[in-house]
Length: 119
Length: 455
Image (tube, rainbow over all chains, first blue to last red; front, side):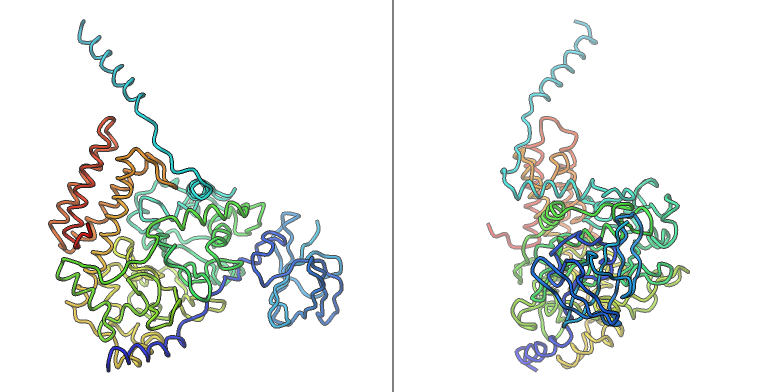
């Protein structure tokens, strides 16, 4: 096989094996709401305007209203850093209108929601 | 005048002359230089109100920004690296002291901090040299052993945020503002500027006009698409994929090369728990990030879990079942008509090539530092008094990577001469420039034995 042919085959095949780039999500839980606003371009910061028991949530941000859906796979974190407590996992029922939240969305669904819990 | 008066008088003259030495010339003033300098201070001194560790605890400047068992063994018991042994709140679920001391492995909770007793990995410490040329890809930056080491936007700028949460915390509760303080945005800018300023600022342009027969043959094998095939993932012996293979701008990529499948790893019989490392993502897909090779020879051990101790062993890895049965190995074998199958002489030739380019990089860095010493100048991101000792360390590395396998004995002799001169700089008051000049001349001789000099 010629070097050129080898390269051509490798080129096509390599695209299949090379993985995507990405940020690591697991430290996100330990970052308070508002810690690094706007760093992750897929996130929004705002105040919960409304939320249904089924997880349909409206968040008011500086850029306007964001409508999103909390899915069963959505990670909900209760940021208690203001009272110097560790972040806890939460549920949809822990989210209430008026709370400051940070959300990461993908395809209309929330990947995670971080809720600032007041002391 | 009696002898005592003479001695006192002579001493006074020396003190006066020393005081008259001109202060070092500072780097050109500018926002970038100031940022790099601030980054240096943060990198080596800032604990972020945590357990006492700094970035430099695991990335010391005098050990190529990495640590391994030999370096760790020389540290004082009170070093902040050992907080798991000295701080009761970090005794469980934070670090495994034996794996750290014996194998240079650091505990990482890449799949989250929810189950510290069971969900963790043990990884070596990657050096942070040459990052300017090593972390960009067309899909975004890749940091850390699996390319996803940074939170937020995945950038090197954000990397320090994750490092503080993982490694600097006072307790395993990891509460921001209690167990550590998070870096401010301007601190992250400075840390990023400092890290990017370390080591090579660009990839090499292979082939180099190498003089050594073994290294020159190794370079041919490295770049041969039918034998070594190394260039595909390490174009120009860096961390970037070949544009010929992966398309323009592919940059730094991730692959599953089967390192996790290696048998008889050094830590396997330690009795300590080392869970399987699933690499990139949560859950992981088994992929790890391609590291640069120019700096490989003096930053052993190799791979994400320090499973191979020697450079020759690391090259030979690509001959073995672990690689050839891996997704990357299978693909490479299928696309090129067979697995990588280098004989022992070829393995040693490729390793000789990597040793020589590492030594050339050591010499480049030592020359840069000694040139600054000669001109009484401080480089950005360096302490003036640290420049000669770091140059000495670079020369020692060059000697070690060549002399270990008896490569280029004439270059090694010249390097020893450069080392002797450079080491004397620290104890000299009036001959620093001359000693630096002499060391530079010897380094030039060494370089000339390794490669055709450009001018």
